[in-house]
Length: 349
Image (cartoon, rainbow, N blue to C red):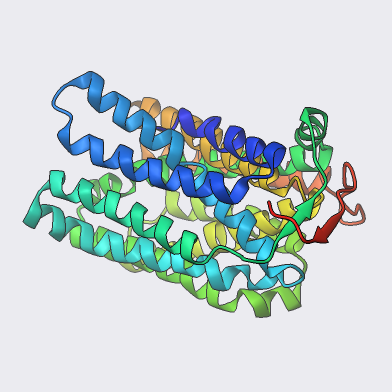
C-alpha cells in the first residue's frame, strides 16, 4: 500500500483535472474502495489477498486529496475554514483508534474489515447526497498544464521540505509504541500518549481560523517544519513519563499546524482548475514517497542503531527540510501561477 500511495493520488487527481470529472471520480473511488475492503475478509490465499490490498490502496489513497480540493473549492475565499471540516477526520481517527481494538477482539478481524467497507460506503453516500447542485465550468487543461504544475519551482521546494519532514516521522510512527515498551511503560501508557498527541492536533484544528489571522500559511508552515527537529531531539532524551507526554503535545505543530498550512500553501501555488492535481502531488510526494522511505529506513536501522539514534537522524533530516523551505521559498515571492484558468457558473466539474 505505501508503494501505491507514491503514484495513485497524483494519477487519479491529474485525470480528474484533465477530464473535469473530479466529483464523479471521487464517488467511484469511494465505492471501489468499499468493494476492495469487502474482498479482503474472503481472501483465503495470497494472490486474492494481494489483489484486495492493491485495490484498496489504488482507490483509497486519492480520497483525501480529492476531499481537500473539493472542500477548499467549496469554501472559495474562506480557506481558513478548511480546518473546521478537517477536524472531523481527526475525530474519526480518535474514535477508530479507541474502538477498533475492542471491536476486533469482540467480532474478529474478518468482521472488522466489513466495518471498513461499511464506513467507505457511508462516506460515498454522504458525498453523493451532499454533492453540489451548483455547476462550475472550468477551462479545459491538457498534459502541458499538468506538467507545468509539477515543474512549479515553489511547489517543488514545498514538496521537498514536506517530504523530508514526513520522512523523519517514519521511525516515530512505526516504533513509538515498541520504544515505550522497551523503556518499561505499559501499552495503556502508550495509548494515552497517542491519544494526547491526537488531542493536541484537534485543538489546533479548532483554533486554526483564529491562527490564520495571526500569520500567513507560509509562516505557519515554517513553524510546523521547525517543530519537527525540535520534537525529535526532545524525544531522543525523553525517558521520564511526564516528559514523554509533554513531548507528545508537539504533535500539535508537527502534524496539525504542518498539515493545515501545507494544504493551504499548495492551494495558493496553482490556479483553480489544477488544484486537485496539486493536492494529489502533495499527497503522493509527502505521504507516499516520504512515508515509504521513512518507514523503510526506520525498519532497516531500528535494531542496529536504536531509537535514540533514529530520533537524532530524523531531526537532521527534518532540519534540512526546514532550511530548504526557508531559503528556497522566500517570503517576498508571491507564488506565480502557471496559467490562468477562468471560472464561470453554469457548468460542472
